[in-house]
Structure formats: C-alpha cells, structure tokens
Image 1 (cartoon, one colour):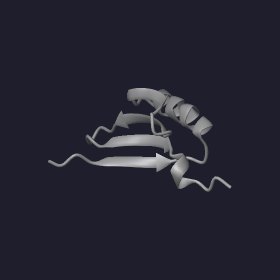
Image 2 (cartoon, rainbow, N blue to C red):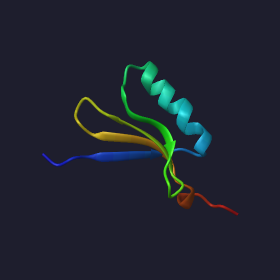
Image 3 (tube, rainbow, N blue to C red):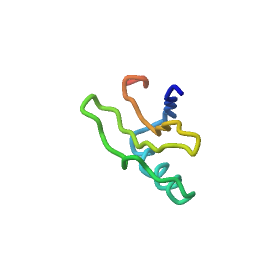
Length: 66
C-alpha cells in the first residue's frame, strides 16, 4: 500500500506548536515535536490510525513575504 502524506499549512510558524499540542491532547502521538527544518519550514507530524503521515506546518516560501 502506498504511503500517504498530507500537510496542513498554518498562517504563521508560531501556530504549529499550539496545533501540535491540541492534537496530542486529542490523543494523537506525534512522530516528532514541532521543529524548524534547515530549509525554514516549521513542522510537527503524526501518523493517523489509517497510516497516513499528517503534518501541521508553516512553509515561508508559500506565504507572501512583502
């Protein structure tokens, strides 16, 4: 079965940690806590009961930086 990965982009990097906490409080186990990747993305990920990898992330490149 192919691996499915879904990323939910939030409005700012500071929103990733509270979203990850909310998911943990709902009973999900994170694969890794919120972290900033070397390329600037801030992300936390979990694996759904169905096996999908789900990320809550902020990728600066997707946001208007004016």
